[in-house]
Length: 76
Image 1 (cartoon, rainbow, N blue to C red):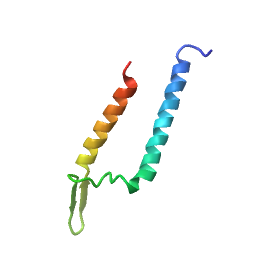
Image 2: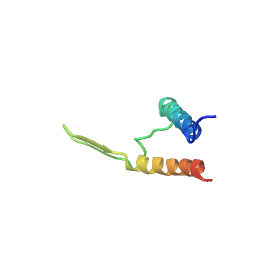
Image 3: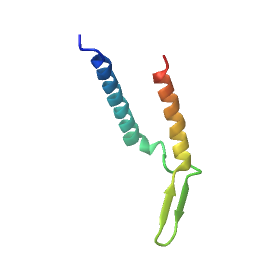
Image 4: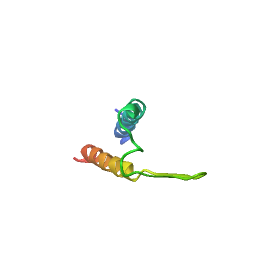
């Protein structure tokens, strides 16, 4: 048995690593299916020598999804 708190810390690090792997896989393979950053409602302004992109709807969708996921994991 490990000293106090080290066992739960190790599990937390493994969980964070697993979440990062899943996010990386979705980011890599899901880009063909999920068009994040180009959703309807995202602001994109392009002029002659100026380009501005503000993914407001993408930010809202990601915020809602991450809130749901984190609530599922942190409820006791």
